[in-house]
Length: 223
Ligand code: DC
Image 1 (tube, rainbow, N blue to C red):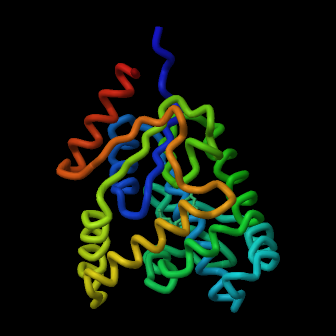
Image 2 (cartoon, rainbow, N blue to C red):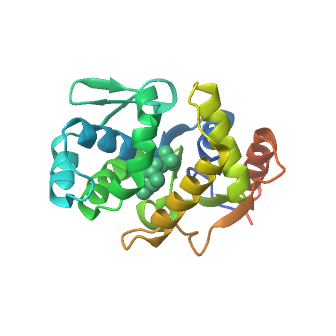
């Protein structure tokens, strides 16, 4: 008999659609939802705010240990930290540019992974990130690795930036996307890669609802 699906890990590169797909999937299943990228973004925002340089791993680790993150808001899309409630500022381009570097720091990862595992322990959750299926929740009931071409992903990010009123060239976004992929996949600690037992799903040419439906189908009849 197929085991009941309770913990779902979704990993993949920048702008593969993980956030919106994960959120819609969680709604469709009535599950909780955590986008772990927001936690790395909050530590990055805090480090910039505290004047800590991106290569000062000891101070970054200390920061992550000293300031536990409170996840709040609908779909956990806000972080309460050090007296600040952070939402849209977590998507600022300064955070975008620094987050991949800061998230390489092993001490930062250790702190955040512990918080993520505590959240997942309650079950019925969709968790989004880079290392969820490989490191954070290796026993997840379903692991999805979402991909899309760099051009498609850059186009999505560029559109989001346009919608926020940020003037930026598409080619710049494409090269930043590729650079962030390289940092995320090339780091020593918990690099971005599909778990051996992950289901790889390319979202090129699919809309959000089609992707969500494919995953829902998979929860009903796991392969
Ligand atoms: O998904 P995102 O763009 O919000 O993630 C921001 C950064 O955080 C990304 O460049 C890599 C890092 N990250 C990570 O290292 N591990 C995770 N589980 C989630 C995000």
